[in-house]
Structures are given as structure tokens and as C-alpha cells.
Amino acid sequence: MEELEKLLELGEWEKANTQTHRIIRDKFSQINSVFLGSSNTLYSEGFKNFPGEDINALDELWIKYSNKRFGISIQKNIYKNVGGRLDGRPQQPDDKDIEVVWKDFSSKVGWKDLANPNITFNNVDNAPDGHLPCWNEEMIKTSGFVGLFGRIENCKLSSL
Image 1 (tube, rainbow, N blue to C red):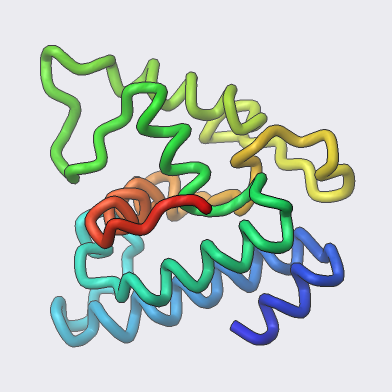
Image 2 (image 1 turned 90 degrees about the horizontal axis):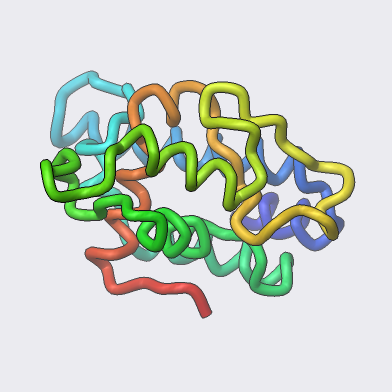
């Protein structure tokens, strides 16, 4: 976490984003090798055992150094506000269509779309709230970031 904090403090957003992925991948692998054998795929369900204190620490750093504009809980709130579910279950018939949720979420955080995010690292002052951290292709394909959102919700962690 110290390296991430240094990068965020220096405004090295792209490197901080990469470091965030590294921290999540390493912790996810440690936790899920205990619970799931050798599975390292960053899928949504796998985050149920992810330590809340680690997610909270990541989130607090992003919130602190972005003046409360970026972070996992910021994204979680946006996702929830556009109709996304946080309970780990698929969208239900009475829920907003998941494709519409993804489109609305991507639009709100300033990503072109989830499959092709078009992330801004150099001019974050003009980026919308929730723009960072952005999620890599694996986190998107497996809905891993939704697992993080649900875990924050379950741990009662919220944006400051």
C-alpha cells in the first residue's frame, strides 16, 4: 500500500491504477487459493472472502488523493445509483437491464464503454467522479469489479 500511496500523492494516476490492480490480484490470489484451490480468475463471486480492511485501505487512498472524486466506493455508489445490484445475484426481471446498467455506469464515470473504456490519466481534473481506478479487461469480463462493490457494501464501507 505504501507504493500506491506514493504514486497517488505524486499524481501518477496510471501507475497508481496499475499498482491497484497488482494489489487486488495478489490479495485475491492469496485468499482464493485457500478457499478455492488454484483459481485466480478475478470473478465477482470470488471477492466474497476478500478482506474488507484491504478494500477499505485501497479506497481511502484513492479518495484521499483525489479529493473524494475517485475510489471503489465512489464507483460502487454510481453503479448502485444507475440500477446495479450489489448482492451478487443476477439482475432480476423487475431490475434494470444489465446492459443498460453497464452503459449508464460507463457514461457516468467517463468511460467510452466497459469493453473499450478510453481512460483519461493525464487530465484527471476534467474526469468525472468515479473515473479511476479503471478496471482491466479481466475484471470487466468476469464482473470482478462488481464483486468489489458488493464486498464494500457488505463490509459497510462507504465513501467519505
